[in-house]
Length: 465
Image 1 (cartoon, rainbow, N blue to C red):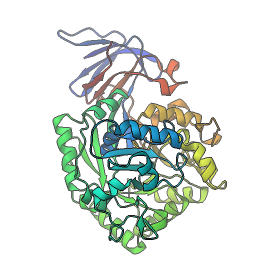
Image 2 (image 1 turned 45 degrees about the vertical axis):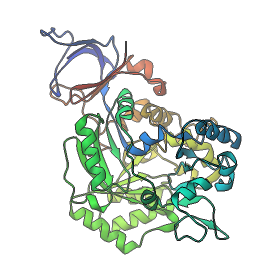
Image 3 (image 1 turned 120 degrees about the vertical axis):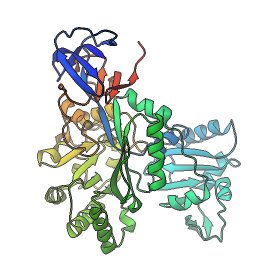
Image 4 (image 1 turned 135 degrees about the vertical axis):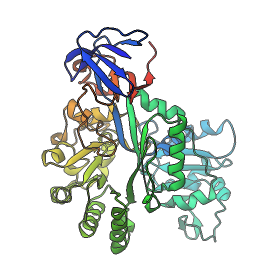
């Protein structure tokens, strides 16, 4: 394929030829080869393709068929009740809600849900991913009884409908139905995304085999890195699917036994496998860094989120050489809740960006979809703006330039904080073509439209003209 008149490196104009999986020629006016496909870019920016370094593919695909139950689409109890009733009007069986936050309904429980939806089983997931809330029909479908031995929360002996941190138990009660990734994968390709890291901490060999299958069949167009638990320590990489880090999903209120955690880190390291830690609080980050210091860090070890990263813990991360994979969009999506809920002393250290880079910390970007929006361009704009939904500037010193924000999403899956190679002859053709020159788009990254996306020279997305 010959791509004519592209903007390269944020400025110069040239033609670019792709052959096989590589860029084979770059020049001002390349001669057309016989039978060569031509795409006229009209000066649109040709950039390295994007990679989302932290999301949950199957949960994201499932969320597309779920009821949105939280901000910004649903902001109060009346709107939630209306959304549930609309969804229940057609069909039968289980209903699934996502994205709930307690600002919509305080102390949401089975009784409130029963008033809205008494007959169809319903489960609603908190946007943190750690809590499910069921109505009475849902509890009955799970076999939950007042005197049962299940992990559901009980108040005065009666199940409240809330189930915390018990997805493993829930999977034994609900039939496993993996959603198709076909539409989602093409949605990601339309954003210019050619690679993703699935950071679901419960992924095991069956999940890895599933990702291999959907990648091989073309259901998933992106290259994949798959995190998971210790069962993946001996997993072998496949075509387009890499074994990712051993993911430890820390919860401040129930941290693992320290020596056991250190032993698990060492076992994964012995299998030449990095480790990654979910850390959204100061306590979780402190605990993770202490465990890494005790067990020994290795290249590729990661901190996911680093939701609160005060200077003393940044120094520890630097000493250990970890990579931070963060979510700039959380300020834009959740910033007002942070202003209400986070200790004022911790607010300057929320989801830091520029401050971490200035101190030399390796930093990469992601969306954490479905727990955040899946559009990486919106996440980039959030990194530039640092504005809450209400318009409050939160962390002015942490703002990035558009170019720095873009770079967060271009590193290789195996080294997410590394800079993307410059587009040059001989480079693998992982590319995205934008509809306009960079200079006209850099001020509103959230409005970027991708015209075409190539993964290893294969055109996986092209917008309709």
